[in-house]
Length: 285
View (tube, rainbow, N blue to C red):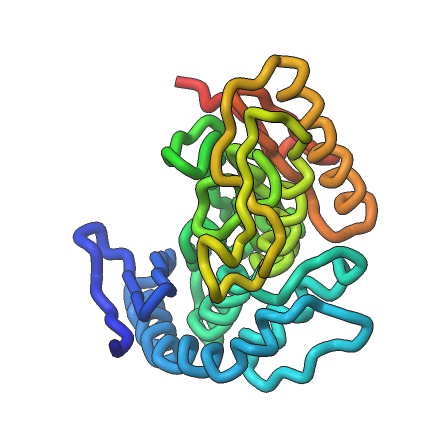
């Protein structure tokens, strides 16, 4: 299957190739936007084939030595997960964010744009110039797509990437979070951190059902690790305890300088970890 490019009715650019599905929007002079979209289309055709050639390495957990990777997206993936090598994590934890980062870089190169974003299934790379801002919705539940929060990003903020992970998303989760949205310097960094924070929202409970990842997908990079397949009824105390564990991990990553903030959701309860006011749940109105 070859890469497909199309313009949506509202003017946004849609790029799709196999599992990669991007929504792209740029703001600025019309001629610059069109050139930016052309650059994105030109870059996109090679993204998936280059990744596929290195999949065996990308599916292996990071160890003491950096993996030898050739493709620019693959190298972004490895760079994003390298700080987390003390736990089980593979470069695949950052694939969507890394694709978004690479595509954004290709799109804005040499262009004069006010702002732009590349959205790869909810993992978003962002370009902002002085005087401009973007607002991104925060999912309460990745399974049903409910929006209950907002992240306000400005040029002065170091955040240029947003990612969301959780049970029911495109990838398996070791935890039980409905959602874990992370703000970071890049989409790849946010993607990797969101995976770990969502995994940390967890507890042992008979209402939580798990299965080895390989039983659900023989090609999963998680191998025999038990992933969450169902969450039954939990008490308010259980929910709070699981969220608190995720919040501890989010705070650790923020204090280590790896993320700027995170919003965690489980069964209607929230935890917000940020040093500023970029994140808020409950959109008014």
